[in-house]
Image (cartoon, rainbow, N blue to C red; front, top):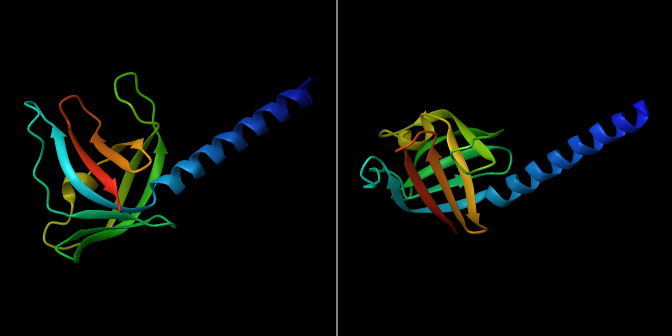
Length: 137
């Protein structure tokens, strides 16, 4: 009986690990920013970037006018909430910020929601928080 429990625990961990790896593979790539939303009146937020690139190996860059304005590393964390959707959140570790970088997103942990295979949202973890929407290149 003890062996069966051990096998079930190990199998569950392997399945969860595979699921996160698949999510990672789906999210890596270049993402064009196309709008923001949320806020108290739904007006969205200002932004200072054109696209975000999440690289395999957990490096990221934000680009504005064909110039890198921020780069660093990122990691996905498991996320659970009864209020917000998204299985994972993302935490950025800024290494270089130029001209303000993409601080709207990278200054705090964001909830990641892969809406479709080519549409992604990053949202603040608060009611009336801002969301940023991206389309895969």
